[in-house]
Length: 156
Image 1 (cartoon, one colour):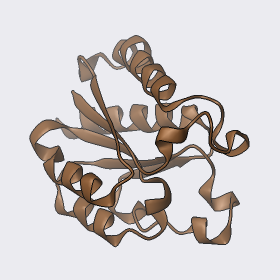
Image 2 (cartoon, rainbow, N blue to C red; image 1 turned 180 degrees about the vertical axis):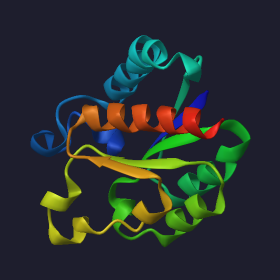
Image 3 (spheres, helix red, strand yellow; image 1 turned 90 degrees about the vertical axis):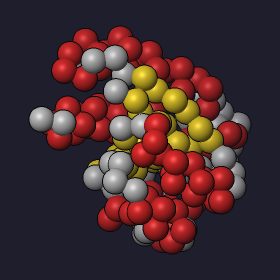
Image 4 (tube, rainbow, N blue to C red; image 1 turned 135 degrees about the vertical axis):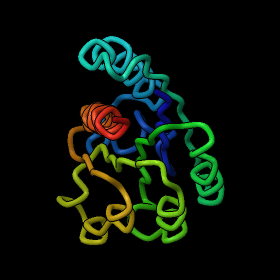
């Protein structure tokens, strides 16, 4: 099972940017922890998934993210995606997700519903199969576990 973990703008600054909101874990640390979670917990708890091969990509550029999303069906079975600030306004990213048949799960470290008013709207949510938010790195783990289960259930 091949899954892409896609990170949007400013997530390369994790660990330094607003640690009171996003925590102190770096993006590299988050990716390593997610890889370990997939290998050590998900593969053991969901043997039907087989080997879970995670890839990671981060960009601060909307066009690069659109290009990446358009290429997803050739390489991945599913995507865990933190669109970051693009969550609230990028119709281009929303349209890219809706144009591919691959399932996407939206994820956020913080609870976007409990923050500034403009963060409460996600233009991405309705083209994703689920949304996880507000639990730091655990949001990513829950999103990945949900996606793996969904993929196993829909392969039958």
